[in-house]
Image (cartoon, rainbow, N blue to C red; front, side, top):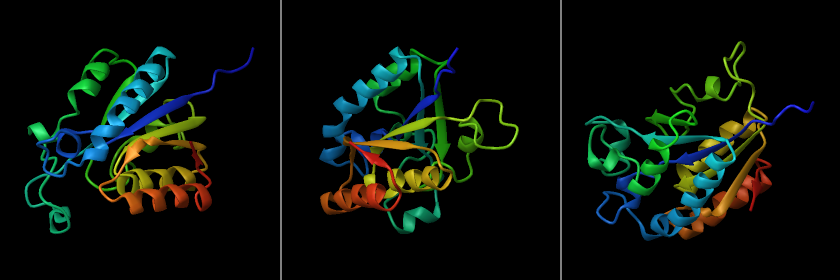
Length: 186
């Protein structure tokens, strides 16, 4: 009997502060990507796949605020997953991981490596493929894709499921993911 492949969808930082019109770092392209991302999440859950939602998570005075306005402060509305995705996440708690992260990479200071079965003695089997969507293409999505590539995990990203406040940076990051990291870009 063939072993079932483990595929995980990672949804990067689709939080109110990045997506909602009143979000601190909100931008229109994030809202434009939301319907595609919502459909990818629904399809993944219907197929029995796991979904990891990363949550950019900061405390007052975070060093990152020297580069960007204070955002995604833990316990605030801006930190919350956007309502459409929160509803899907709440409906499948056994297939969903909400992963708080404080830096660009979803691996830095989190349990993601263990969750994906990439550490010796991991409780779960090694992931066979990761699909990646979210914001921002050239920041958190890129650095998470880079970490996956450096761990030899096959990665598929969806261009219409990613967005950045800078279209040129979005396009450049997708090219880099494909040409340098070996990521499949659709």
